Length: 212
View: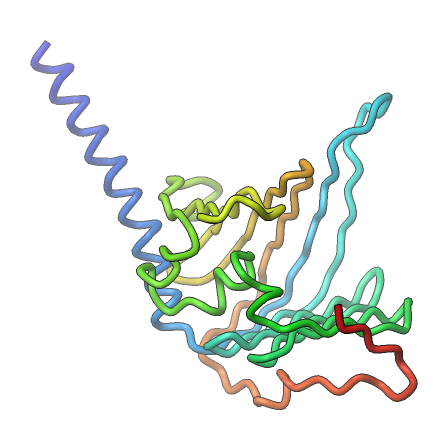
């Protein structure tokens, strides 16, 4: 019996250590990484439809940059070109194939979103106002943190943030429609010079601009 109790205490200690590691790495990422750029691969998997044996998935590739607080840029290059830019006030989405730009107020558009989770917050305390944060242990060589929006009226169910030595390695995003999006980051460069011009967007001449 004593041995069982001792083993339980040891396992509990390991669990608490993992929790601290995950949250500590997220805190380190929020406080120490002011700018960054990386390549990303995004795999979006939709729930199976009736009669389907395999879930449908779509893979995209591109480049990601950000500058705290609240400025970021996603450039999708394959298979379709698309640009998403947050300049601190407006969130711009340029769909090249549709020849269309959508512009929304950034504060309203982001809210409790994965983008807000990784670029807007500067501390766990600040993120905790919008997300319930909990360690999700260690897997695939990463320390994981689970984030659930405190306001449950949106499409986002949860985000799992995977970190490696204070660097963002993966985001796993689940929505209320059963869709999962996994972004994997490579070639991570933290605290490198990123020109402010990268976060300014000017709609191309002749392109329709929609402001919902």
